[in-house]
Amino acid sequence: MGKNRIMAFVLAAALALCVLPVGAAPGVPGGFSLPPGGSAVESRSGLGSGQPRLGNTVTVPDGDGIKLYKVNSDATYLSARGGSLVWEAGSRTATLHGLDLAVNADYGLFLPEGTTLVLEGESRISVSGKGSWSVLTSGDLTVRGTGSLSAEGESGGLYCLGGFLQESGRLALRGAVSDGLLVNGASEVRGGRLEAEGDSSGILVSPSGSLKIGPGAGGFAVGKYVGIYSSGPVVEILSPDFEVRIDNDGVVPVLLNSCFVDTGITTPGGGSGRWEPGARRLSLSGASLGGITFPTGRSTLELEGENRVQGTILSADPVTRGEGSLLLRGGGSLTVESGALGIPAVVLDGGIELSEGMRLWAGADEASAVETRTYAGERWLHVESPAPPPVPAPARRRESRDAPYEDSSRFSEDETGFWRRVAGRIGEAGDGETVTARAGGYTRLPDFVLRALRENGGASLAVEWDGGEFLITPGDGLPSGKVFYLLSGLQERYGDEAGEAAGDGGKEKQNPGTGGCRR
Image (cartoon, rainbow, N blue to C red; front, side):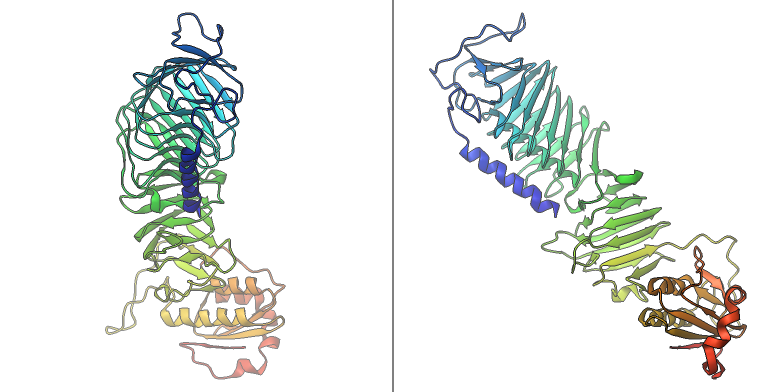
């Protein structure tokens, strides 16, 4: 799942910090540094008029990054691609003046702990090395200025081993494989604009970190798995101009168990959704997802339109599988299909609860009792809401003073049980076999019986009832789109061939109240 993938990149990045070379010479792949007392290549081009130049001036070869770790003297770095970086060692201030770096190494810019990064003009750092980060810091980092920095690396845009503070300026951070921004300490965005986008998460907050987006900040955090990934509710969003979003591709799972802020969701085909962790509610509208991991406990899934999950719905973590349950409600439908052999569509220790009127199928069968969790081992599950009635439901009635009320728009328990047994025997029938249903005084046939005929494809159904008898064969066109069908209407459509198929069995005595069925 996505969580393990994300943490693998975190560990890889941390390891990279431990093994990066110190004091690399000019031209050495991996970075350009200027040790104390070292020589420099003088250049008199690359800085516009009026821009400051301090200490030694160094021309950075194209393809190299800049490492300021243990550089204790002032220096000016000129990029062969344009722009500059001015380093003031005493105050640990690095000022970017439209710096442009395209690096094929582990990092683009390596900053020491306690650095202040000042943005002037439009700067860009792009790193293409495997597992690379555009900007690495060995500790806390402060960002300010009137300019912008676009930073992209394979693993991520900016990795802070300590805390992160943005006071102003614009940061556009992109992780081609993992995260836009990764922070390990207390972090805050007080102003400016932060745009963090990653193939896994927009922002990853480590277990030792926290993040606060102040009311004066703007921007977004976007990922395929999760917008902002954290191990607890250590993220605070106070700005109405900062968006957290999951842009799911319909293939990877969304990790709601690690998402502690309100998050919008977009999916292929115009589907959408929203996760509200405070209410523990996920709303989907015509969405297509690659799996869902809910937090431990009871969550709610609200459905609108036709929704699909090509993966597994589970709670907490795919390894620990903590207890969780799910309430399904709304006016839409949901189809869940596991993408892996042997893995069920739903793994919820606490089971599924359906709101009134919803129906659930696991495989070819409608689950007779959700409490039994008969769906638990199935790779396919479908839930749908009842279609709205074309006319107001008729009033409730009862046969006598002592009899219970019966809603004539619904099937009784006995009637539902009878037709479920019929559907089950259709599912077990072989090609060419005929299942005979003695419906007695029943007057309606539920759609799930016809669905069983569609899924079998080779069985026939002979129905005997008080109004006559009829036969539905594999070649017949089966009606669809309704919750149930009147037997009188089916009698008119299929009645001609029923007598031959039913044979003498149709003459046996039957209980008109409960019916019976045989194969």
